[in-house]
Image (cartoon, rainbow, N blue to C red):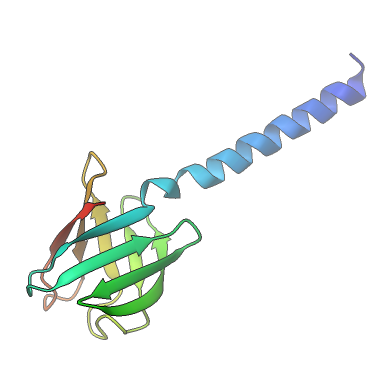
Length: 116
């Protein structure tokens, strides 16, 4: 195999590795989670791969964005869900089947939701 082909294969291999590693981190968050909030309302949170998120609370739907941190994600709905408690901080259980939604604001009660 000549040098040009080896170089091209090396570049393509590097590109594939970088592409796969860029997509791999956020896929664990993607999904639909639901349950009853601490206030007694039915909540459904849908986290999409493209960085968008929807929050439905007793039929009222809010759309926002999520960003990934080291061990959590932040949900930002531009104040539609709670103008004093956003961004909401989400952590996953070790098995990835439930999430806890919290806020830095002490007025927000932590909620737990199950993956559907």
